[in-house]
Amino acid sequence: MTLGNNERRMLRALLSNPEAGWNLNEILDVTEWTDQVHVAGSGQVLSDAGLVQIVESSSRKVSLGSEGRNAALDGLLESRIWNWLQESDDSERTMQGLFSAGFERHEAGPGVGLLKSLGVNVESGSFVWSDENAITNSINQRSEFIQVLSDSAMDIGGLDSELVKHFQGRKGLIEIEESTTRTWTLTKAGKEIKPDELKDVQQIGEITPELLQGESWRDAEFKPFDVNAPAPIPAGGRPHPMQALIERIRSVFLEMGFSEIEGDYVQSAGWNMDALFIPQSHPARTMQDTFYLNNPEKVEVAPEMLDLWAKVHEYGHDTGSKGWGVKFDKEEAQKGLLRTHTTVNTIRHIAENPHVPSRVFGIGRVFRQETIDRTHLPEFHQIEGIIHEPDANLPMLISTLKTFYAKMGYPDVRVRPAYFPYTEPSVEVEVYWRGEWLELGGSGIFRPEVTEPLGTEWPVCAWGMGLERLAMLVLGLDDIRELYQPDLERLSKMPIL
Image 1: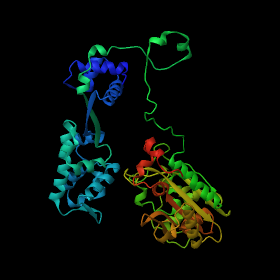
Image 2 (image 1 turned 120 degrees about the vertical axis):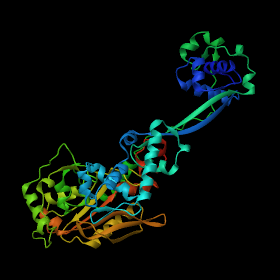
Image 3 (image 1 turned 90 degrees about the horizontal axis):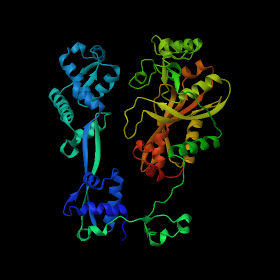
Image 4 (image 1 turned 30 degrees about the horizontal axis):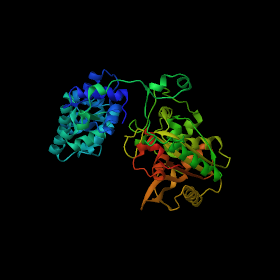
């Protein structure tokens, strides 16, 4: 096998101490290379030639992330709240007491969730627990884990695997870095080569017309090429699987006679929540679930809509409902937020076309304060649709959804009763997949409290479903995050839709 100049240089370096196992930095130092690519490439060629043996060892180091470093200084969130609970009187152990103690709203929700997983419950508005020692021990273990890592990164094998798994699921607390270490050692054949046989030579790697016009090539050495060596197969461009799925869904709805509508990401709480008869005290409206904005902090809403929503929420107005029986806050209704669903688009469409029959759908991004895991993202897509006409009814809604899923390749569809604040009757849609029924979305008939303030008395069939969950089903994925990882190889292997 003919060696290139880089391979000759690396081999000369290794022969300067033929019995040693050389690491990367040692080879870079002797060869005077600055790029480790030369070492990796030349080492592989020498290994293929049987002159060098490469030994690889992998390690995984765990270190603190930005939130972990803060926790090492100030204490874990659950530890701080637990300490406060133990030091407080029974009367103070409430959510309001938690806020009064200086805990911010963005801390309270996650912190209470962490304590609930340890055995702290909320009963009648107060925090209660039964096994204080078990909770304290669990929190102490977590705190000690963070303190151990505050000194330096540690090998993952020397840490409690359950605690590693726990903190991996919490944003910014720990980071895991994987590294591979290689050593290069001469084989018996490599040691037998004489250094004076490894002088650099001029090699020609490309034959050009200019080269052939002269005579210099006659005594030159040509770099060999193995035409049988494996080469990457060029892959042509293709749409991202999510975009391809969106186009497929769009074509199905258009084929079924629906029209597409769009809307803005930024909405008022009124159109996003109040128009759907969601009470202003509903948990989904808290900062733990919804992204409220500083700019714009307020989105103006027409006074007549605010008045109508106030009447509906307070006493039902003329819808036949009793409303929620509490004072309606018009300032709350004008808070700016990132839309939490695309239903706001269809609601506004009805308000703008109250007496025009329509069958419309929309596919768009929505935003919710979700913890990222296998099935949840804080930013995702939703498919929304309505049938707004005088004879709209529940059988029409169910047959529409069954037709849609059948066209998507899932003929086994069933519905079951459900509850949603803004539809009655309400049903959840399930499809049969891999031997089990999976819930993919909600649907129903908009309540009069929703439609009558919009100026229509016609029934409205409505449905909404998460696009990413449908994508997981269509693409056969178990982790929603795979859709957005910049792994071109994995994306290229996903089915073409």
